[in-house]
Image (tube, rainbow, N blue to C red; front, side, top):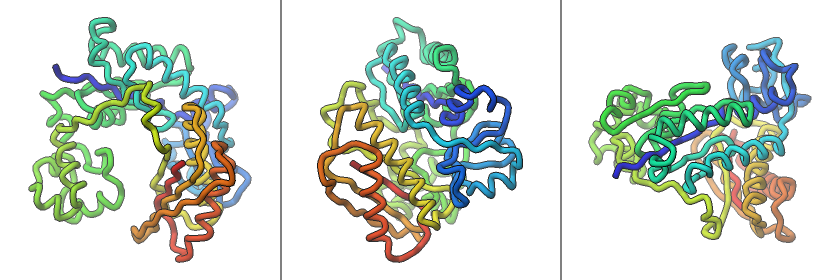
Length: 342
């Protein structure tokens, strides 16, 4: 029996929650910013009104204001985001016990065993969107497919508030014309390497020689070839599989170079907030914090340090993470990617 996998993505999640709680923001271009008062702050999230005027996640605040003079900056409220994320997951859990979070605003669901109760994949996706809109006041886009990679692609294809189905019979028609950068795990460095070999679409990747891809990207090239050909078989984790977790982390690749300490501070704080929230969700504390840093020349390193006592607060994680960054990032090179792991 072919699997039925959903990927639900809450649209413009941070900004949508802010507009929900402050009706005066509705209809205006809004951006959630790490520190609206800081000259070097960056855009963490934006709504569609701001996006339509060219504002992008990661833009410095001065650049966002230049693109959109009447933009409204608001500070993040992570407790609200966590609350809404948890409510969404509780809704998902009514349809399956296989729910795998991918950040605060995205989840995969395996509903293969649920279709006799709730209908086919599209019917379940449509019901989820309806409930999220009614019960949370925000919208979601849901991808429906037979594997996680294509379900994620589907949720990205139509926004906001849409269901996109990618079947095993039609995936070449739907997926292969898309830019290769749309494929999950194709980051900037990988995209650049593939472009140099004329691999511009997912179809080009799928039809490329596997030996060439291995030469370009190593084992990751073979994995991406399998993804492009619809051969992903990775399971959706069970929502109750908490005891298997040995570490919790989050990472991000910035849309622009992170140059100043303020850029690093804001980005690390966002990552630490997410890690802390997930630790609270599972009832965990940690002894050690690890950071990963990759600069704009793609040189990377990891460093870890012990906390003075077991902890899970975002403040403690951030203080240790930033301390290690300041101690070890001696090259002074701009940073492109950061990760934090507890």
